[in-house]
Image 1: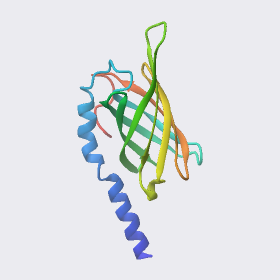
Image 2: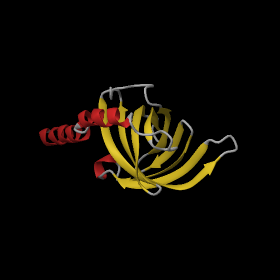
Image 3: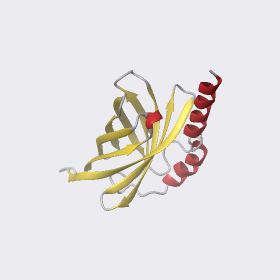
Image 4: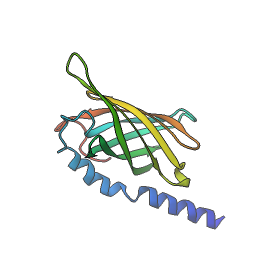
Length: 159
């Protein structure tokens, strides 16, 4: 029993260790140009379609190359657990609507380790100030829904 408790405690420490450095990432994300339809700071919620769990979600998305990005996520679970993780993704299509709004479709996958569900695959769309994605892993699947935070607008801390 004590061994299981120690393992759980270690897992919680590992998952929450990046939260303090995420605050710096979040603040620095305010300087990212939002001319790019994906890059910048985003804020919203995640929801599991498998079990109904939900929580707050933030992302700082940066370009890493041609059509390549990384999303630095901060998520909450049950109001007490907070964790951070990175997800690389690639833009598959870019469109510009008649009204000038840019739309991108993206997808990717990343391995968050066996305790977090293994390999996550995800796909979605970003349009103007809306971001919607679906995710799937070994034991869960659900959605991310976020709104873009423009520089000088919205939250300034990581909670």
